[in-house]
Structure formats: structure tokens, C-alpha cells
Length: 360
Image 1 (cartoon, helix red, strand yellow):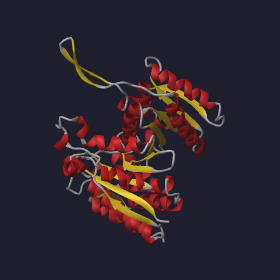
Image 2 (image 1 turned 30 degrees about the vertical axis):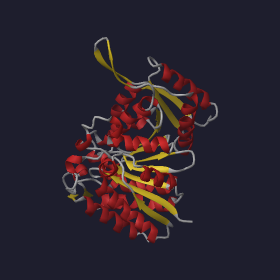
Image 3 (image 1 turned 45 degrees about the vertical axis):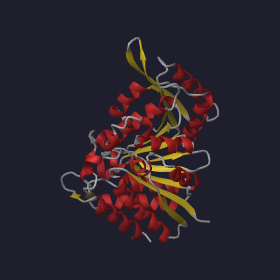
Image 4 (image 1 turned 90 degrees about the vertical axis):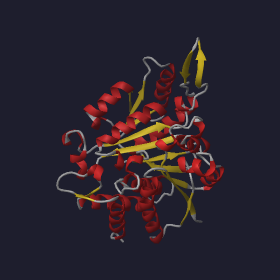
């Protein structure tokens, strides 16, 4: 039976990078993968067409899909919308919440060819391979009550940081099982010295550790974790943390690899359905100029094949193709340096496609 994949290009550079990833999906279909591709609107594009960042039609297609490939959402065009519920980012949050995509996997893997592109010394980042497991549907981004109101003659903004034991246990088991498949080390990041919600987080992680005796569990406060990611990032194997801390730390880890344009992500629910997207944003300042790096989106397709479609061989074939292209010295602007050849978004996508097909 054909697997349905919904492509949501979104805003900014989203249409450009997803176009290159779709080339790879079509090549996978040529290689025997039984898939059907559909396309929908989300974010600013959804608002412009339907006055909603997550149109009902898009949500229906998403619910029926086995996997979703998302480009990016947002841009200055929509930043001044007075109704925050209409802003593009609400489309992304709505997909996560409605599909219960609670488990976010964000690898920070440094390709050896890009050690010179990292802002840190090569000896600090060479061989870097971290997996950040971020809880995605709870925490302060979704907590209630929230809002802006007047108190004692002035406006006050407030949000609620809340996690239940069940939510913490669910993401914790994902992280422990990921650590079992890697190097057996899990670092849980919290702020248990000042936040009660993360005191509970730490207690639940400690309780879960008894079920995973082959995994070494450690704890770290989020401020120290941010410092350690820059100081000695290779000390980490798997990191598990809540929504807001994971949002921040995964972007910091992304820059260790040379460019956030290199990093894919997966957001999964308990049924194996997943949404796959690059870690970077919509970059409206370079949209339409052929400058965007499509490799994170292409590598997101590899994650889709591995985690939802169970096509590990095709996933590895894509990853080898990316490595082969980097070996050739091809670089988009964000990862270019002396001695490499700068190429456009489409040229990079075509090169990966050629390297993928050459492995037949």
C-alpha cells in the first residue's frame, strides 16, 4: 500500500529547499519506494490563502499522511499581525499539537568535511555526534493560563510552565531507548535548582533509569549545558530536555556543525507518524536568491525514511550522497570557505541527486 507524504513548503526559503528534497523523494520512488506526494499550505502561505496559518484542509491532509515534510514558516510580512493566533508559527505549533508530535529528534552531527566551517576549533568539534531529544507538545509554549493583561495600571505578560509525570515519562523513554541504540549515555537537562516543574522532571528521569540499567544517566542545569556545548561538546551522547530548553540548546548545537543549514529534525508521535523539517528558519532575507542550503531538508528526508518509513538502506544512501557531494568540495554560501566551490540551492540539490543515483 502506498505511503502518503505531505509536503508543506511554507514561507521564505521553504519552497526552495523542499523542492530539492522532493527531487530526492522522487528518486527514491524511482528506486522502488511506494509513495504518493501531496502538497499543502501552512504558515504565512496558509494565512494569505485562507486567513489561517493552519487551514482545515491542510490539517486533514496531515492527519491522513504517514509523514510530513515541512520547509519553514514565518517572516516579517506577518510579524505585526495583532492576533497572535494568526501568525505563521501557530501553524507549526498546531501541527505538533493536533498530531501529538511529542518527540523531537535533533541530531548535531559534524561531517568531517565541514570541520573548518565550524566557529569552534576543529579539535573541539571533530567527530561530534549528539542527539538532542526535545519534548515538543508541552511546557511553557503550550501551558495555560497565558496572556497579557493589565495589573495595577500596567500591562503584564505571563506564561505557565507545566509538565505532567506522564508527559515527562513519555519523552524520557524515547531518550533512554535512543541512548541504548547509541553509546549508552543520557544527559537530562533541567533547572531543578529553581523550577519545581523541572524538579519533577529530574525525579521522573531518575525513576525511569531503573528500567534502563545499560544507560548511564546524568543531570545538568540548562545554563551549564549551554556552556558545556561550547566548551566540550563531545562529552554528550544523547541529551533529553523540555520544549523551551530544547529549542535553545538544539540551535546552539547546530552551529557547532558549521551551519544550522546542515541539521535535520524529526517530530514523532506514538504511532510512528512524523513531521520532518530542517532546524533552521525561513530566512526571508535570502529567499528567492538561490543561497539557501537544502542539505538539512534533504537529510530530513533521510530521517523520514529511517524513522517512519522503515527504509534504512535508502536513508543511508541519501546520507552517503551528501557526504560524497561534500567530498567534491561543493558548498552553499553558509558552509563555503577557501578552497571550496560555492553553488546555488538548486545546484547543490542536483549534485546530491546525481550522487544518490550513482549508487545504484
